[in-house]
Length: 115
Image 1 (cartoon, rainbow, N blue to C red):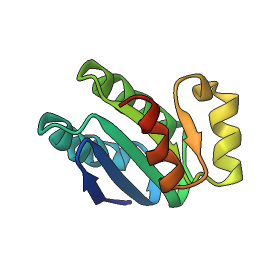
Image 2: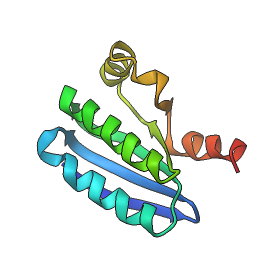
Image 3: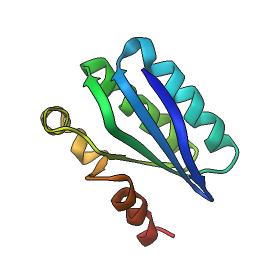
Image 4: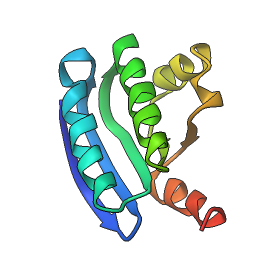
């Protein structure tokens, strides 16, 4: 998996995940995002539109990232999830923790109500 910062607009950070999100790739994602949180980003959008695999470990990683960023006052939104990934989010009840949006723009707009 590759993750890469696609956009940093003030407080909003957009991270694209490409390939698979699992135990082997988790640390890279958390480290990249943490660096930006430490430099002031408080709103994170994880764009999963190019993500092919989201394992149970990947779900755990998203939860770990959420918990770590929450301690710094940051919020995480997910977008672009494929139908099987949405089902995994629902079955694991992570929809109670993460807000899920169809695309990056919708996720970014959701932060307006917070600002």
